[in-house]
Image 1 (tube, rainbow, N blue to C red):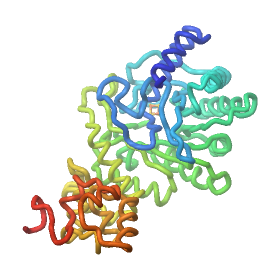
Image 2: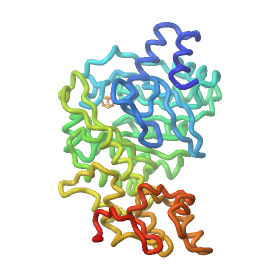
Image 3: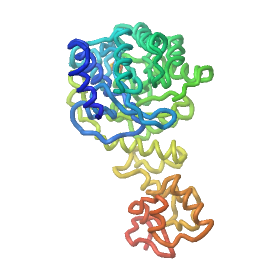
Image 4: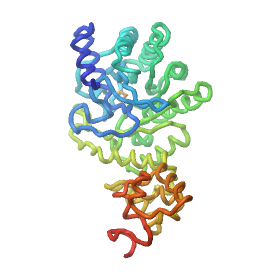
Length: 397
Ligand code: SF4
């Protein structure tokens, strides 16, 4: 049974009354801007399935620290919010669905029920700030305290930290959760002013992130802390988004930066503005992967941007190969880094190539394929037994 089937089944067969079902549905849909998947995912381009890995309001998939893919009950605590972020359907200005809030006991009981019935394995709890961020954060914490204390819940919990909340709340949230996150949304104070004028970038967001980073020394989180940016909300360049992401990894110690393409929301000043194509969001995930997993430096990756600071329409790794390689590489002699630069070769296949060539020469494309190389992408960049594909685009023939 997939997530949609499970919650559909839940709606029709459990003891949740009609009012509570409406609440679960509205607050699940309201959380669609918060990405909880580990990577960008394939999604349809209409309706609530457009953002995040949400297969149905209320359920998303995420990876735990030990690498398991688990189903999480993904929801807002409340969809009421005094802020008016121009990219968010929960803002005070937007004309969304009605306003709903859980109570701590209500939320704890729903999570427990779904958990016991094997619908979910954990909770991803985000929220609007309600009337007051401190009060709402307190109630979110209380719900998790009930789960952990009164009900003995040991499942995975990801808690959003609301902008502007006090350090005591952050500390308590970190004692209870496996992962916490605060969305930085954009790259600077001035761009924050363009998309979310009531939030202070430095005080409400970056200062809270610094608290999390400092508290991590005292209370290390099993799944670390993460953040999220809206791509194209303030019309910032891709290069600015990338630089901010690098800063987040290096200075703030985040485990992951997630990206979410801007979508136009009814009732906001950006209503009618063109939504950003998911392809652009995907390019950020690819670039992030090259930096975070493959270890290419910020400096090395600058060359993938065009003169105006935007990412190419194609996979950034192609552009990287064209910048960093002097010509096609011979897998029998190339360094690990050169192999890693070739599109279609990752750290695992590069490692296998290095190991196998200590014993014998690699003679054929088929051998590379067996070592995990995505040959269709890699072949234009390789030279094997003095022979290479003739369709190279940037080296002379
Ligand atoms: S603070 Fe969060 S919930 Fe409120 S409008 Fe902004 S993004 Fe939406």
